[in-house]
Image 1: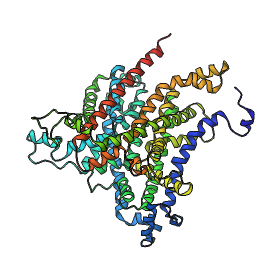
Image 2: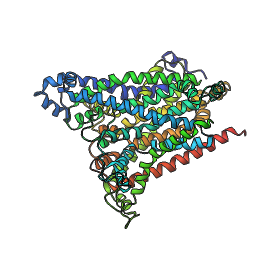
Image 3: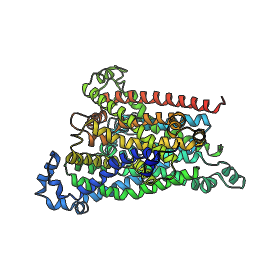
Image 4: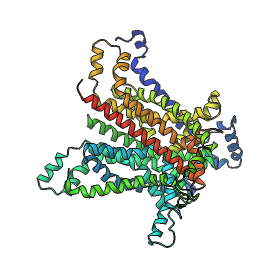
Amino acid sequence: MKPAPRLQRLGITGRGLVVALPYLWLLLFFVAPFVIVLKISFSDVDLAIPPYKPLIEWIGKNSLAIKVNLNNYAFLFTDSLYWKSLLNSIKVAFISTLLCLAVGYPMAYGIARARAATRNVLLLLVILPFWTSLLLRVYAWIGLLKANGVINNILMWLGVIHEPLTLLYTPLAMYVGIVYSYLPFMILPLYANLEKMDWQLLEAAEDLGCRPWQAFYKITLPLSRNGMLAGSMLVFIPAVGEFVIPALLGGPNALMIGRVLWDEFFSNRAWPVASAVAILLLVILVPFMMWYQSVQARESAGAR
Amino acid sequence: MNYRSSFFIITCLAFGFAFLYVPILSMVVFSFNASKLVTVWDSANSPTLKWYYSLLHNEEILDAAWISLKVAVINASGSVILGTLAGFGLARFTQFRGRFTLNAMTTAPLVMPEVITGLSMLLLFVALEQTIGWPAGRGITTMTIGHMTFSMAYVTVVVQSRLATFDSALEEAAMDLGARPLKVFFVITLPIIFPAILSGWLLAFTLSWDDLVISSFTSGPGSSTLPMVVFSKVRLGVSPEINVLATITISVVTLMIVGVSLWMARAARLEKTPA
């Protein structure tokens, strides 16, 4: 079981080899790209060497708009489109996170307190939509929300309304889509946290004269703090940069930064601007990611 | 069980699950609708299988599905290897240089907005092509690398949490009896974490099969995946064929998930009963 001493002297161990492969992979394909994005966001002159098409197109524009390319970041702050959509994205993601928490918490609580057999079935029901294509589930809402869609048809049939309501391509549709798509990401970490809860604490509190809501507020809620934080991060961070849902349900006026980035890249072919948007978004989101990681570390330390 | 709060909780669960399942079920129902208007039920000619027939003869969708299948299978297999190594390393080696970085690099892809990952991947491929000539153009290879990078993070989490729930005493015992680390891994560890590896594979497959954003950034001409084709169709409005596709997807996923969880429940029971 002794590793070959000569290899060990070189710093090469079995353990090192195990982690080296995923480590190098992520370094090359996950971390290194951000360095390139950063470089392109400053729109380095080196990029003028033109061995492939999209850059040539961009360089063609460069001579006309060289100031814009050198000042991508300044551009982001002077053109109101960018900061408005950034603020709007943060607002939409924040409200969606709160809505997910409001819908997801009672569900996670109910699942955690159900009998073992029921619990497994309910968990399966939460996981199932998560495994079904996000695109198709968002698409389902188009059918439900459009003018001659299911919801309008039912309401008109019931006589509640006489004219179809405009539901699709509204902010409401976007919130529904985001909450719907991200709900499992809120429920699962919350459930994992609540499942470990010692329910005898609640019984003790009630024996000592606490009302159920008081006991919940004083015991369950603080103890599930990490679960709530983890779930909220899993919803908030990706929702800020969400593209598919605003593109399909939000209509042309839905200003979301993920969509702006997509359009800059695919429609305007403005790679440096898209890169600057990506960097800006990263700067905002990285602290949240670090927070998420520390919450996760605390959770797993608590489990041991 | 706290009976006083249970009425409220049961109501929340009922509404929550209705919210999750009504849209899915509506697609299933309307996949049998004869009307091209999709949500207007044509009771004279429905239910019908005509959209199933037309989907299965839609060349564009079938070609895209074939590309998606290839990418998903290669991605799942590659991610399982990378993710198992990372998950094993993080769960079993408590101290090593770069542990923090590896942990961060496997957590970040889980929450990173896809537009950022997609854009950065593409710019990397472009820069690589410029400097070393590989990858030549974009297509299935670049897409698969893109998918593997975020899928492996999910596999890592699954494997790592499975390893955290069983203590290393078995592995240590085997080592004490003189088994080499590699042998211990293949004879003891691998069989125990096999269910996690299987679900990791299925998860990675699904993530790749469903991915739109990273595929759109990293694919090249002639390598449109199924979600890319669906997205361009859906942008033009609802289509009965997409409902059929959704119904097929939902059926396959349901069968797979129920099957795997029954199998795992059985394995867990066998594990508990003394031999």
